[in-house]
Length: 323
Image 1 (cartoon, rainbow, N blue to C red):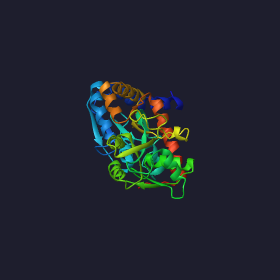
Image 2 (image 1 turned 60 degrees about the vertical axis):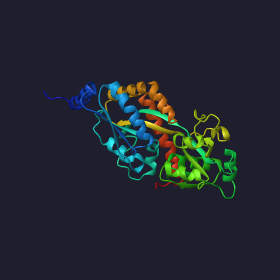
Image 3 (image 1 turned 90 degrees about the vertical axis):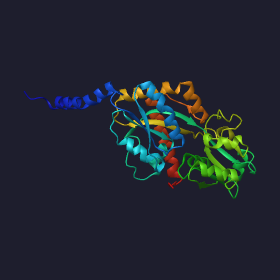
Image 4 (image 1 turned 45 degrees about the horizontal axis):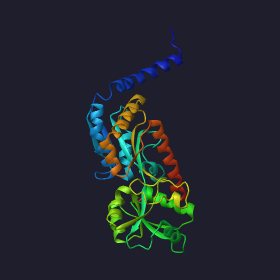
């Protein structure tokens, strides 16, 4: 008897799905889970990964190891995970550059929306526009006046195409302001020059800026999030300073290869949500200036894709190029 073509195709698809279904049932019993931190050791992505790993290990009953795979604004590590077996044993921990890279870096070896899926958005953090202690800028309003004047205003960021760079480009375009961008090779060099007054303004994370605010060597002028930063309650938001709706937070997320079984993604999501409710973990994330977000994989995917769309438009409209 001839088996109808449609039935044969259904049987073939079922056979293909069986190994993944079995993997989902066994997960995570077969081997260690790898978290690929897409930036080098020492930065926030590395620190978040190493904070989560031991608690996830305890929660899942399986070894969880962190592997740093930095380079090209996190795209090298993301490419490694996109190409990994979708079996639930390889995940990427990414920074907000993941939302910028598709429009900023030509010829990425993977499709950011199709080849990776979001497990969870860990959290967000404001960026801080700050100036050195002896600066003429006493308020954010002073910056606006200067940037709308003939000379404009200069600021430093952690690099071309960084979220700080894009946020200031967006602010300048929408607010009719002229900002001169000075890119640095990371937060350390930026803060060294900012503290010394070699660059009039800096934009960086709460994590990288706050020690210099606490020492009174720098002064915070505004934050880029829609709400005031918990650690800087007296510092106004850009949104409340005349630019309603402005919101440009830094963020961190965990991603999986796109074809990872939904059941595995859901279990990993639940485990991370639970770990982030641990008082010790929550306290340490908050100490880094991270506002915990969590939530479902679906909400996380929507967030990440929205970031790609928003910042992709900014990159294109401002003709921003990578370092």
